Image (tube, rainbow, N blue to C red):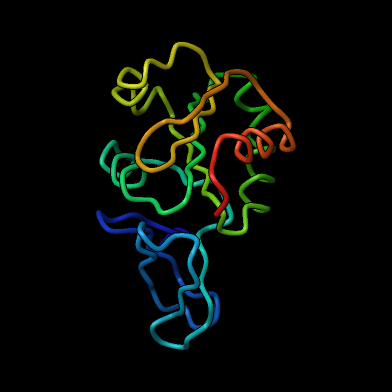
Length: 155
């Protein structure tokens, strides 16, 4: 199993202590969750979440208790490759306050069309099931974190 997978209720992660699979409910992201087996604390993945289907995207956006930073990108895009390591830093430092998700607009063109993505990379922040802001172009991690801070309510 990858570091995580999705189902319609949450993100399924393996406990780093015992290997048990645990579901982090979208509605409880950002809350303290314990492994069902060994009781170790679990948190949302500290890496960007690769969105593989429109359903994964829709469930995450609609139900997440924390803001979701969405990176719309494509493999052939040079600026997208520049911003990718910056998003890794942002996700690693998020500490459960928000999650970072990546949407490949070539693979999931329906999402790009639905949200009128005309330029990549585009970063959009969703909170409470709706988009609250967006920006285009590559940005350093500090700028992305400032965008999240100013666009969302404290968590």
